[in-house]
Length: 323
Ligand SMILES: NC(=O)c1ccc[n+]([C@@H]2O[C@H](COP(=O)([O-])OP(=O)(O)OC[C@H]3O[C@@H](n4cnc5c(N)ncnc54)[C@H](OP(=O)(O)O)[C@@H]3O)[C@@H](O)[C@H]2O)c1
Image (cartoon, rainbow, N blue to C red):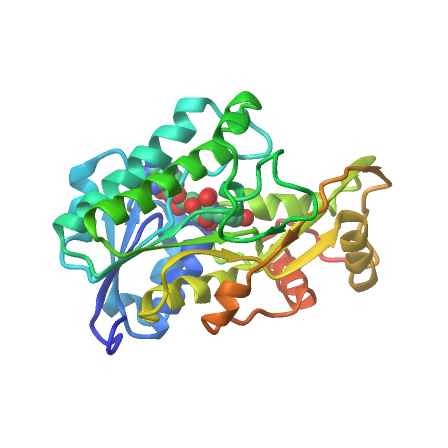
């Protein structure tokens, strides 16, 4: 959408997170002026952002909490585009109370969109998730999962899957607000995002899933996984802003692999780690399509590159022993 990125002010919410950090890096490399929102400015968990090339001139961090409208609105004022990435993401190790997931995700997104309307933002790119697409027991097994599919909110509620519930509700509300107000909103729904981590002192939930494969587990579910590289998702998000023809939702997934095949792939590249000893079969096979995003010009890298770059970054961050 932008004629030229030079000096175009854009806002990235949750700038210090795994995916948002790559997006900030990409935007700075294209000379955008980035307003990044963080909750605890000054915390060392954001130090990596300040080291990106161009950060000293073109990155300004704002203290903002999704449920505090004033803080959000100050960060968005003057921006042509907003990339709404921030969201509470469930950890695999702690329970996730309903209110802590739903409120910031749903009301937080509405706050962002209202601030965007007030600031006359050109376009909002909202990072939703495949969690808002395929968590639906009524989807026929042979149906190709595409942008027309939605997770079943009632099923998510019944199964207490508050992450899926809140991503679905937030995306539905975002697209409805866009229809009702004319605000340009494009949503990106990534599968599980892996790839190198830039943040030094925090590990996001999806990277923990990959790290778990190296911990010598006795047993693990053998299910289908849909994976996309964090750098490819950042490209998709920027494309959703820069391409005027982008509209509606985009599924963003590159590779589908069963857990046992994934483990074999990793074992071939890194033979000296302890991998899961056995697998329990789970039948969750589906076909998911990112054709709409590819028609927009999106390309993705090979899975091997994602895996190797992830593992090397975990080693460099001291999360995985070098073997
Ligand atoms: N990673 C995946 O596999 C995956 C897959 C599909 C979709 N997504 C979506 O991608 C986005 C980023 O995920 P990620 O993996 O990069 O997660 P992440 O590293 O945990 O980042 C989440 C960010 O959200 C911010 N945040 C959380 N609650 C907030 C609140 N109440 N107010 C303001 N900021 C808040 C956090 O800010 P602080 O730094 O201040 O704590 C953090 O920077 C999320 O919307 C997620 O749903 C991720």
